[in-house]
Length: 83
Image (cartoon, rainbow, N blue to C red; front, top):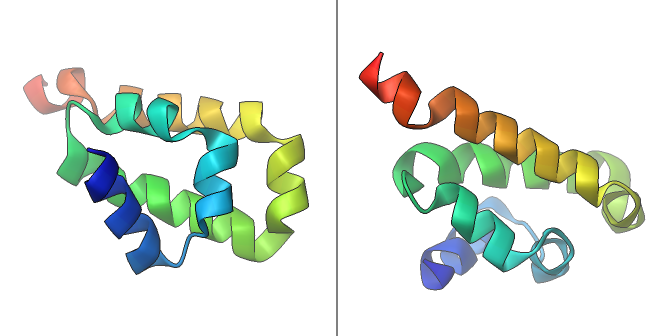
């Protein structure tokens, strides 16, 4: 999963510092169940926040971004697929 995460971040233009701040393990846990479903929205969110607000903003708002990822998991996770 770590390799997929790194490749996706590179593809989307997300710096490794952003992955460090959010936590690679945290992101991996979120996308572990459905990597093809969740990886693109996560990387898109990271890139968007990085481009619009910068690395310093991400440092200050890590918890908020983590909550967004948990929401993505709820929206696109198993219950969505089974519904």
